[in-house]
Length: 175
Image 1 (tube, rainbow, N blue to C red):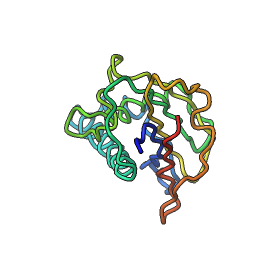
Image 2 (image 1 turned 90 degrees about the horizontal axis):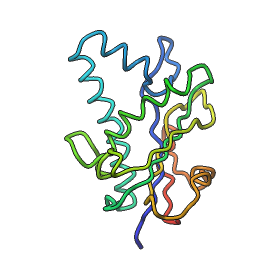
Image 3 (image 1 turned 135 degrees about the vertical axis):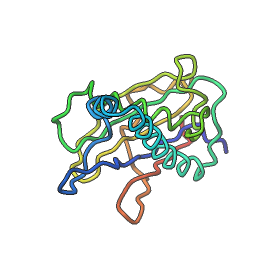
Image 4 (image 1 turned 180 degrees about the vertical axis):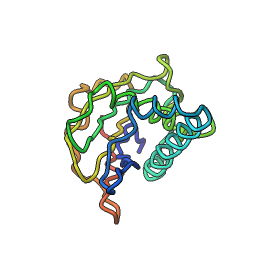
């Protein structure tokens, strides 16, 4: 059986001074790092991409995922702890996520060939808020499968939850 759709959750690695979970890096965090020190910004980008790649590899291994040769549709559904941040700030974090999913480069997991316009269609959306487990749902499927985009990620039944309570592996082979 060929798996042509994969969906998994990447929990946010960030927390505030009191230990409360925060959303994934957004535009404000990216700019703050870039203004501080160029080496710090490069290290932060690499660490964020490697973090995403680790979760992507784990999900891909579970279903024996093979990198699609054709265009892929990538849907990122951001789960924030609250509704305080603007969507344009949140969606800037797609950069690190896509870099962690690509086949090229030393930090990518290889779930998509490349993050260029020639290889992917990208949809970013805001998901429900979850104060305890912010992060991002990643859904990848062939761009030509014919499944309406609005049906993607509407149902997370059958989701696998690890011992920490983090969801990381709703995987489907239906198109």
